[in-house]
Image (spheres, helix red, strand yellow):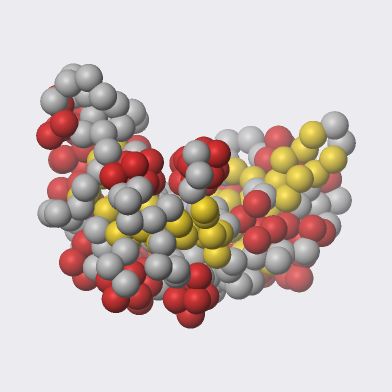
Length: 299
């Protein structure tokens, strides 16, 4: 909604959009659609940790830039971006700044004034709210072309009757998510998980993402020389995801890991583990044991 809304509302000011190569498809695909309509989009690179360089952002800005969209934290590797610094650059140039906070709400601080952003996206099911609901924070004064025309719902920005149940569920979940204290325990579990993997597998396992500036619940690791999808297929009783995809015997590296410059022999073995507020030490220990069994079978 935000990219199309800003583009159509500010066409008189320009047609240039800046985002990054590691955004979620919910950001990248609308940008590619807008390119078909005349938009010019700059996709900023990232370093080997998945971090954006604010100086790269500053250099990419033109007099025709109308929107900058940089995710708060990456959905695959958990790297946290320097949003406050990037938003200051946007403000200096009078450019609308959006951040995708789907992964960060309830895990790290996401106060819009501290971040200095104009638009912020929230996804309900990432914060223990019901599936099928989300929200877009809009700073007063930001104009958007309606996403859906036809009626005056949501201040005329999106026609269609809202679900009061889903909205109430999202509101309550956000109230609970504001207390970040439980994430200290989640971070400790995550770090213990990583230490156990290092002890068990040594240099056969590598960390993807920034070692410090990342979400407290995310652990993305690569089992070097292996295929993540093959490990995942055998990993019974453990919910995880992989950054590589197998098609007709060919392994495709995740676009995020590719943008980070992760070598194929490392990136193809990537698995992402996401811990939550209800994850226990027993859960982590079981995951390590299951990985040990699986890797013994596929080695």
